[in-house]
Image 1 (cartoon, rainbow, N blue to C red):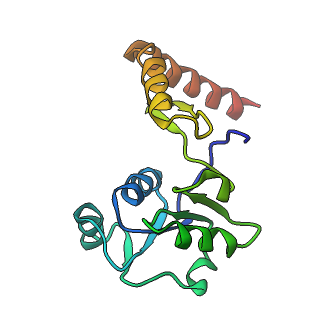
Image 2 (cartoon, rainbow, N blue to C red; image 1 turned 60 degrees about the vertical axis):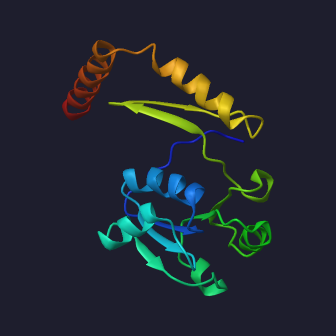
Length: 166
């Protein structure tokens, strides 16, 4: 797999499922400004809170083919592998799909990531061990202190000035 960082701001993200894994995935996209719809007959309290605050849209139902059509990114994170697989088989070729129960059924995975200012660190073990990916990511991120992060901000500002002067 090719590691990429994708701008999801104002993009349609569809999360199918209403449990803890669905919540963990949707928070990543919510933090980046995505427009999120959750489809699930039932949801955990954390997702319900986001729905009540109008931060996400929750459709209380089972997923249907028409639900998949407009999404840029689809996360299949139900507790039913058959539903997750059905989702992966029914997306369009131009859509990105993550299948939480079986990474081989989707076309992207969600790596463990940490953001500190402008620094983004992402680590994947390509499904071998999400726990190990988390450990590696935390170890790497601990090596960059506030001074380093501030220096990145300064470099960014300088780069923007250079671009304007061209």
